[in-house]
Length: 198
Image (cartoon, rainbow, N blue to C red; front, side):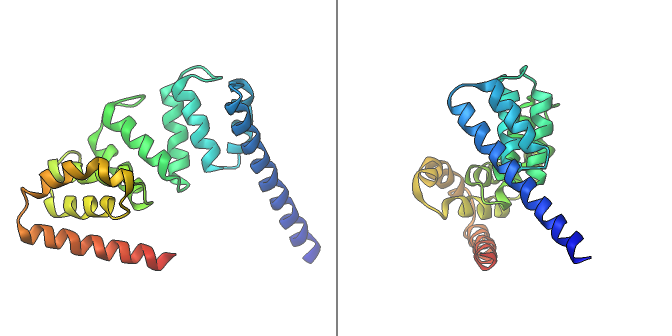
């Protein structure tokens, strides 16, 4: 019984190691513009659900690098990666739904995937989600929830926060002090919960 368990563990480690090797091989091939080799390596790595390999392969289908350009395939791969916890894939998928690339345009699905990416910490999705709540695009209009998400998006500071600062300040000027305070309270609660997970 212990031998079988050990054998299973060794097999899992070897598979993970191979998938990681294929991922690195794909990254290196892509950097050399050897797109056919990159696509092949990412396909091998993604067979075990490697989210980064799925995302990279999805981008290759989106751009038609080493594979025929296919937005439908890109959407399917982004979705698998996003379901595996890849924030960038969730954000890419949200944009594809928002703008109807490879899927029927669907603001509700866009908001769903922006929320997934936002919850995973993807800053641009946090801001985009705030705009959707502010405008009532794909979600019920909710200015407090908008304030929550733009506060979260601004929290890390840096270049990302600077890019959205003017838009946030313009939207925030249209909110009541009570809406701003509640949005900030929700943001602080969310940020605190994220910090506690670390």
